[in-house]
Image 1 (cartoon, one colour):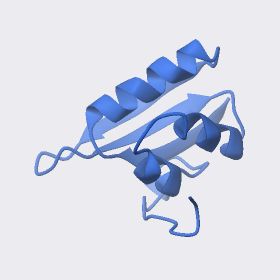
Image 2 (cartoon, rainbow, N blue to C red; image 1 turned 180 degrees about the horizontal axis):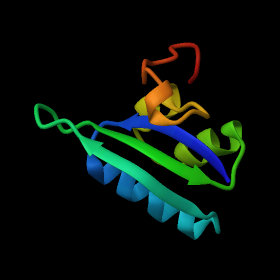
Image 3 (cartoon, helix red, strand yellow; image 1 turned 60 degrees about the vertical axis):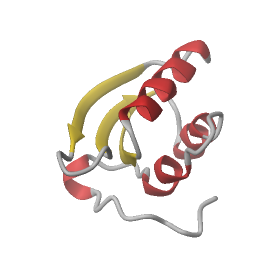
Image 4 (cartoon, one colour; image 1 turned 30 degrees about the vertical axis):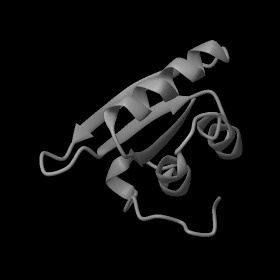
Amino acid sequence: MQVYSFRVEVGEDFDLFLKNAQEQGHVVEVDLRLTDRRMPEQHVQIQVDLPLEGLRDLMRLQEDSHLMVQTVRPLPMSKNDLSRDWSVA
């Protein structure tokens, strides 16, 4: 299992991600799920049985997943600045 952290625009996006992962047969353990009280965005740390590109492909199954795809890194949240990588589509 690999540790990843990333941002999601709203909690429903992460809930849909978890549903899609389960339907695809992947194991996802949620370590942290933090909400910024000033906005609906959430910061998430998970462990999952996928390499980075496999995780991005799973995220791309849902509409409007660009924030997750562009901020996911194989790092714990404490080491991920959660900035967007604009080169990733």
